[in-house]
Each structure stands twice: as C-alpha cells, then as structure tokens.
Length: 175
Length: 378
Image (cartoon, rainbow over all chains, first blue to last red; front, side, top):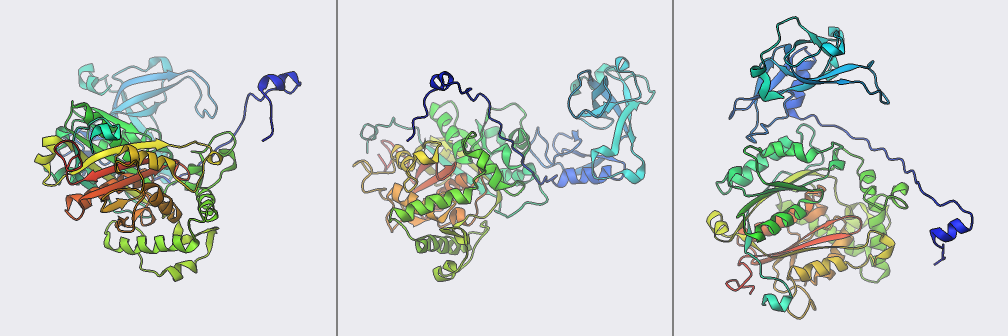
C-alpha cells in the first residue's frame, strides 16, 4: 500500500488539504397518491374539496389519506366540503429564498374548511400581509375551469370573503 | 444449556403470537403505504382478538429513501391510530430490527405486548441508485455501483474460494421458486429445472437473472407477547429463544466477501449453536428462513450457520420469491414463526440482512418451548 502521508505532511509539502468534496445526488420517484388522495384529486379537478369521515370518531379529514390517524380505521365516507373556511393560524413570509415564485411579504395560513376537522396550509392573497388575523373568513380562488386538473395548483389561493371573523372558540381545537 | 455456558443473561420468555403479511407484488399502483398497511394491522390484531389499546409498544421499520417522502414512517402510523398517546418507536432498518427493539423493551419487564410492523415499496424509486447511497459517501457512492454488481463481486469471491459454482446458484433459485408455488403471498413462483435456469443470460457475471431478487412492494406485521400473556393469546407461540445482530466493516474491500462472520457471531449470540462453540453448526433446527436476496448469498449464510442438508431452508421461497426492502427480513421471522405456530416445526432459525453484500446480519432463534429453566432449550 502506498503511504499517502498525513494532513500535516500534505500541508508541509505545499499541497492544500482537501476540505470539501461535492457528490451530486439526484433521485427520481413515481408517486402513488393512493385511493383516498386520488378521490380527493379527482374532486379538485371538478372544483370541489372532497374529504373523508372517520366511521368511529366522525372527524372529517382533508386531504384524506385513507385512515383516521386517531382510530387507525379506514375512512370510507366521502364528504364534500365548502369552498370557504377560517384562518386558524398563519405566518407572514418575509425571507426571500431560491425558487420563490411569490412576491414577499406573503401570507401562509392554516385554513379550516367549513365541515372539516383538520386545517391545511394555503396561501392568502388580495390582502396586505399586515391585515391577516386568526379567525379571518376566507374563500378559495380557483384557476379558470379549463385549467383545473389533478393538482392542488388548481386552487390559486384563498382570499377574504367579507364574512365577520369566526369566534376563537369555534376553531381553537384546530390550531 | 445454561445461561452461564453461553455467556448470555437469562431472557424473559417472549414469543411471536400473531403474524400477518400483504401479498408481495411487483408494484402497488393504487394504494399508498397507509392503505396497504391498514388491513394487515387489522388482521394481525384480529388473529388473536386484540386491539391497539392492548399493545404496550409499537415499533416499525422502514426507510424514507424508498418512496422519497420525508417522515413517511410518521404518516404510516395513521394505519395504527395514535390516540390515546402510545409508546412508539421506529428504526430506519428492516422490520427485523424493529422486532429486536421491541424484544429488548419486553425484556425490561414493563410491558407484556408489542406490535412490530414494516412497510417497503421498492417500486417507486430507481432502486439501484437508492441502494448505492448506503455506501461510503466519499469514494464509493459517487461511482453509483449498483447492488447487482456488488453481489456479483461477492458471488465471484465465493467461486474463487472454491466454495460454489454457478450451478449451485441455479440450484438455490430453482428450489426457492418451486417452494414459492406453495406460498400464496410470493411474487415469483415457478417450476424450472436447473438446466433451464443455466441457459439464462448473465445480468452481471457470474449472476444470471434467476440469482437476483425481484423488486417487490409488501408489508408485514408481528405481535410479540411475554410469558403468560403469550400463552393467553396463542395456543402455540413461537418463542424467541435468542436474538442478536452484528455489523461488519462498511468498506467492502476490508471484508472477505465469501464468508459472513457477522452472521456467525449473531448466531452464536442468539444461541443457535451448541455448547461446543458453534462447530459443527446449528443444532436441532427444523427450518431456516434466510434473508438471502441473491442466490449466492444463501450458500454463504448456510455455511455461517452450519446448516445441515436436513434443514428445510426457505420453504416460503425466501427473498428470491419476494424481496420487499425493509420487509423481507421481518418476513423471514414471520415465516419461521408460522412453521412453529402451525406445529410443523419445533425449532427454527430466522435471519435478516441489511447493507451491501450481507454487511449487517440479525439472527433470531425460535422454538415451540421457551428457553430458560422451564424450557426445553435450557
């Protein structure tokens, strides 16, 4: 075996020590949405939010993943949800990052659709960032119908719908 | 043999009391991980009339790299249900290692039952690239060596050592896939002659197509229970009389690939060998389920475990019939335990592997009677 010496020897010989090694990695995957999420996405392609109800605890999940995370049983009953809901909590994004497609500052919120028992993340637009608040009532704004597809990108964003703010008691369990 | 004779501490009797598995398939097109797991979890509980609230612990084995989803193991818990809060853990390993963690916790005596499950979908990824990432990240992974090429190096080392021929590999494959005809969950089940298999082209010499495992999606579940609780739940538990796992050097060049010293050490630790210290080999085993993804590896494992010709090896068809990554090791315990639970075997040994070229190995000894003073294995 060749004696390659030590780092100290290397430094003494004038060679710069190797401190960084770059090994690019790329992995491609075929995603399987699953039965329940497929139903949800087919609903999105028709302009609807389709959740699923747990037969044991009656909670409604959206987007559904096919099981109730509390009870561990299959959620098989589809439930069509409203196009509007409540901002349960939010953050205002002020930090630019690579690949950012929206102008900062913008609002990222947890939205509890009417009839659902779990909030999901959505973008709030058509509102100055400093005016968003917990309890704000919002509605989904969709792309033109001909652009609806099997993707959440069919929903452009949510915006205030003008209804009075929801009472904290109605959404405090969903923060 | 006494605990003193083996150098092992006396173990609390823990047995496999229920098992369940999905069919092993080439690709689960429609269901996500949770949807595949849920009916199998339901089955493993229904077999013995329990629910998740009867479980003292839940432990899973999987890897996010297979489906490219961060924290996929957390989402998989939806298949079990997590309210009220429960004691739960996960290993980024084959489910056999999750079973080891559950067994260890059961040894402490605080809990009497545990659910172990694992899920593995090998189909969504570019498997050869995913598996290259388990290699040393500086010198090997950037070359993207694929797992078949590495297994071929090992098979060639075995041939060069004069321990096997290509015909031996074909013989292993022919037997495995013929045995798989009796396994309704197997993916590759065929009756083909050794001569016909030897007419296959090489994939990477000296390995032909038949010496390679299929790409498989599957899930498996096990319920473990200790002492009297195991006897309550199951007429004939498959008692774990010993379990151990060992790891060899990461660098392939630092190992003799034609032998599996870590399997031998794990087998000693699991009490598979007789008191003479492991020579000539495993005593009194009816069945061995070996996780040998490549046909050549079965020969290495047979030698490490000292299995005689009388031992039925991989009656399920083994990993050559179905090899869902992260599941195939736990499935060996499922299959070996099943032979004891159905009364067709008295003693069995199950083996699981992980890493390139059998780098890590787990050996689990199972018996119809628990080890210890009251058991036959005492």
